[in-house]
Image 1 (cartoon, rainbow, N blue to C red):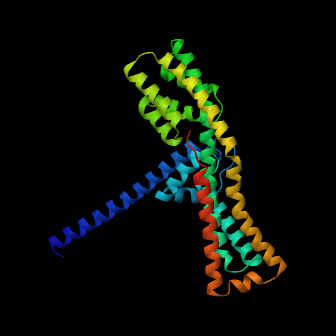
Image 2 (image 1 turned 180 degrees about the vertical axis):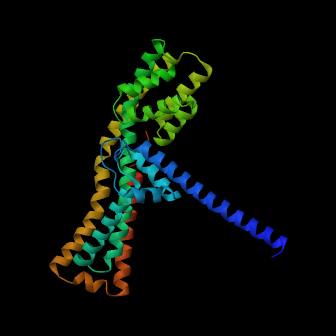
Amino acid sequence: MGGPALLTLGVALLAAVLAVIGVRTYAAGRERRQAFVDRLADDGHGRPRDGTRRRFPSLDRRLRATRAGRRLELRLAATGLAVTPGEFLVGMLAAVTGLWLVAHVTLAPFFGPLAAAVAVWSAFAFLNWQRQKRIEKFINQLPELSRILANATQAGLALRTALGMAAEELEAPAGEELAKVSDKLAVGHSIDDALGELAERLPSRELVVLVTTLVLSNRAGGAVVGSLRNLTKTLEERKETRREVRTQLSQVVVTAYVVPLLGIGTLLLMNKIAPGAIDRMTSTFLGQAAVVAAFALYALGFFLIRRFSKIDV
């Protein structure tokens, strides 16, 4: 074997050794990174910091490695629920399977996929409802938050200190969200960035006004106490207005949910009176098209009623 051949063989062996070392180093780095992320989320005993035990940790790690899983984790974090992406996915799949089987046995095989689609939509609609509920609760706490910040600022405390004080005194969700803001400020984030992320997590006009007031006051100085006092009064008035509007529209909101339920109840009653009627109806193309059209019209009616009853105050 000549010199060039030996040199080529040596370079190939060296490249193979370096490749193996690189792969092992990369894998070890990923494991350490994931262990660090788990320690941040857990209390050291496999449980989240709220004391409950985490389920499906391997599924959570795989979901967090995907873009859809990260988006799902952000949506769950905005709801305030102590549910991991893996738990949500497993629960949704269990609900899909259960509703599919129930619709298949109770009504007809044609309704199985429709029930599964409704289950998926309902799961994400539940997340949106929880997020909106958390936003509403946070908005109701804004007058008290503005009052605490005004008192702390008037006493001579810095805005960072006032935010930390408000995080300790207020209940969830305001206390939890302000604690996240304080943590970001503690590790070097600016007030603009920390408050901007808060406004993105819980979007509302009232919070945007409060964040804008605090950011501008922090940048340019000025009478921040007077601005917060006026803002507190305005937020109190808007809170009462929102409560009156929600009371006036409660009947319309209930109607939006009752109309689709009446359609489903009619199907069940028809199948109860004439057993097998739904199965015979969905055995033909025209019957299936009529059922799909009816469900589409119910969905359209629900959307239109909810759209018309949505009034931004």
